[in-house]
Length: 325
Picture 1 (tube, helix red, strand yellow):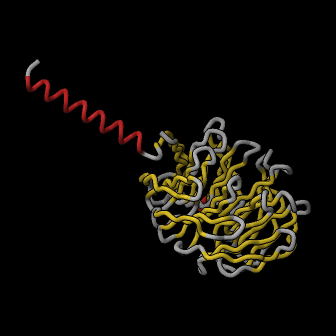
Picture 2 (picture 1 turned 135 degrees about the vertical axis):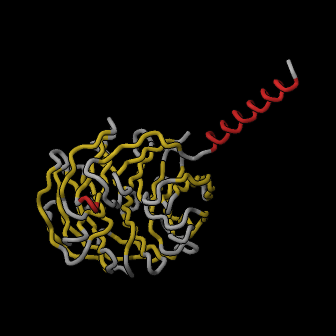
Picture 3 (picture 1 turned 45 degrees about the horizontal axis):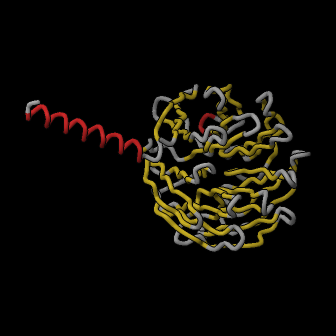
């Protein structure tokens, strides 16, 4: 073998090895792109309907819920509900609740027929929205307001509201503690709502995170994970509110989700998804994956553990499927 050929072989081996390491250490790999019919339109929160194995996208600019069948990765007919920003799922009664930010209402959708029905009038725009199956109540955040509206899912009527400290962001419900956890972006706090009284019972600071947006729940280990818009992720004890750990993430993170199988939190920020590993009371940054700048919301398929994000450019709207290598 000639000296020059030997050098070439060594070079190729090094290049292949480097490529392999790079692929192996990437926290996510883009595996599929699905075009959403209807052209470009901004979107907001992404939710999961576990009962029907669907992804629900609040396609705000399209005035609809975009529904993706996760069994086939195909887009179903859009549900026209207005400028929706968040969708809550009532699996037992077969309903979706879509919060409209423009016409200031919540629209009730039949999850079997994918048709809108009752409209519940409110006094302001709706942002995030969740459902508590124990007290059969929908909780709808007043976007940039200081209240969370309550709706009885059995009657689909407005029953009142919960006063909170400031403009809300993401809200989650934990079946183990039977409590609701609400990020407050202007006060850098997380507030605890007791569904039995519909009152705030605890207020916890999320420092060093600021302007908390994304919020994920690790019910099994009793942890709350809150993402600040300032590029900081914090993990808190769900019972005391004590901040146990923090880690750097992308700036401007909006929605986050925890893969309970791998213990990795994925955070959708400006042009990147940050991956952070949860181990006990520690957080470990695994790196960022570059994404289109419009991608700021995501959700994890609880069956396949694939991650889905949504965004639009000047031509189309897209769903991106990522998997861990």
